[in-house]
Length: 370
Image (cartoon, rainbow, N blue to C red; front, side, top):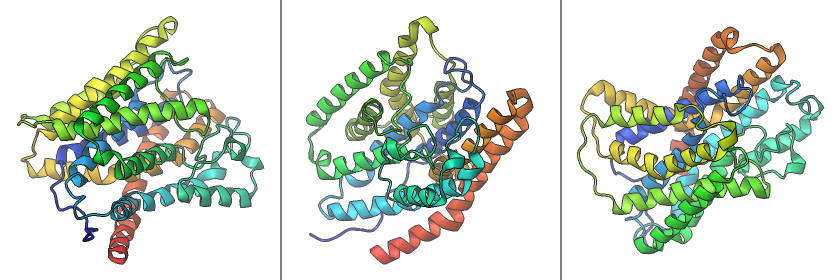
């Protein structure tokens, strides 16, 4: 078989690129506001955590678009090389940023930090470079994260799992078989959501049975649903698709908590229905639209380019901000200038990593490995 390692020459869905960037910015805002929440009930930008599920849906859709028709000329190892070049450099950078920021996060919230020897920090960082999950016994923060230097690494771990399943098996499945998988994955997600003791689908970041249950429930429907959606969908032409899809996405992620403390299942149902029904609609609208104005094209390109670098590098800054809020006991009204500064710093850090690291390293790896 002839190797086809070169990147796909297909056009990108410009609006979907932008939606990825908007979702990444909403995640940053959600995490900043999380530092001021007294519980999950009063969290501002309450459903920002659903951006991860939207990322999984987008990933499945785009992977089907980019690779489903290339397997006659592309080997499995070529696919893995392409995905590693796309994802792994920023995984390493995210862990490096996390290690640099680690000791600045010392607070009563994470009392273990000042007890962590430097050699153990380096060991955890090196393991993080591989994205292999840490056992809870190796925790250096106190939250039992599989990647305690950079919490969002958990979603990349599951992204890799999905990519492996796709390349080795699921790409060969018929639409019928894939539909059955998606159906049962949706049932799995709904059950997990409405029976959640917290009334939401937050989780997936720890190598425990409970967290792995949440992680796989959050992964399977959106990722494989995205694959199926691309295979069966017939796109139309929707005017103002960028505005409508972006607005709907922001509304869903910013929605206040649904239901009372005595009816937690209602918010869980909101989460599940958003992932299963609303997110595919948003994706359909975005994929069915086009961009005519040059400024809007540039904006979409920018949002798409910075989405992954921002997502994978922002959380070490959030750790520092959260530690500061806990230490100073600053309410949001007083901390607001610092929250804005953290938000802007996250964007600048992501953009700097993109231009000075991710793009040069990615181009170098493509040259060396192709």
